[in-house]
Image (cartoon, rainbow, N blue to C red; front, side, top):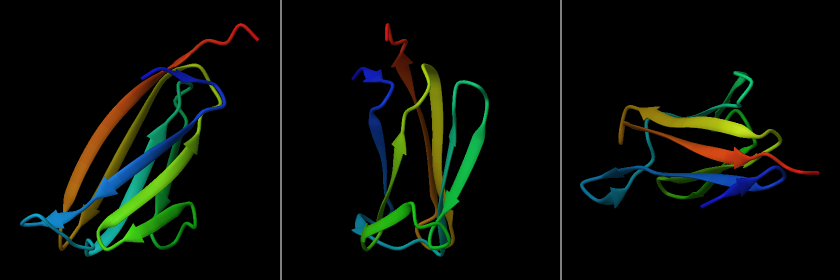
Length: 95
């Protein structure tokens, strides 16, 4: 999937224990790094940007404002501890 400046990337995390959606003991913590190297951290329930959709299911909407490679990580500890990382490439705009 191609991304452009101005798109919104929804980073979704589902935490489970034996296939059953389960809230983690701590977090989740969403981190993202923009192409300039700036790192931002958002934690549930401290930061309102992290939304709990249902038991074990959380998301963060990230507005893309710079071309290049973006990286993200979601992690949690305790019950349903897990971590996942990913990246996207954002196209350079002609405008």
